[in-house]
Amino acid sequence: MNRFEWKPEYSVDDAEIDRQHAELIAIINELAGQLHGEGPSDGARSVFDHLAHYVTTHFAYEEERITRAGYPDDKVAAHQAEHNAILRQLQEFERVFASGDAAALQAMMPFLYGDWLIHHICGTDKEYVPYLTAAR
Image (cartoon, rainbow, N blue to C red):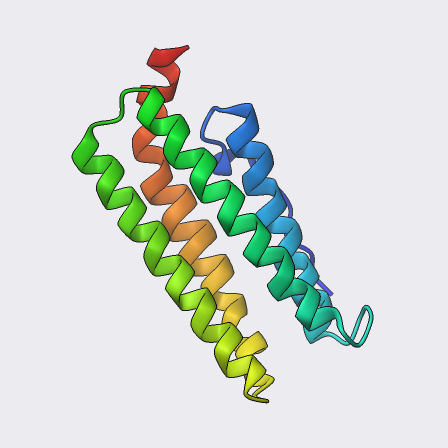
């Protein structure tokens, strides 16, 4: 199985947020392992549990951090809206999986890697980097 690794271009220049984003990569790798038949048979459930904990803590931390850094309120609101959309999509994957459709796991991989890691972290999150840098 190919494993995803942290890359410098994922960095938002904040050690704690970067650590949390690296945790998302670990979750992606956890899911990839499940898709390749690695890990315990109840591992898919643990991926959803891990994601549920992750989004709750990460989104709250990131939103609070960028607010403290002086990121404009309208941009914080737009960022929160993106976070809410990610959360809704994850809840839908979980709902489909819980209904007995294991294909939800396969469909979740491009979402986690493409939509969340590449689009959101490498795109949207990069917009707040100057505010974090200036706040230091």
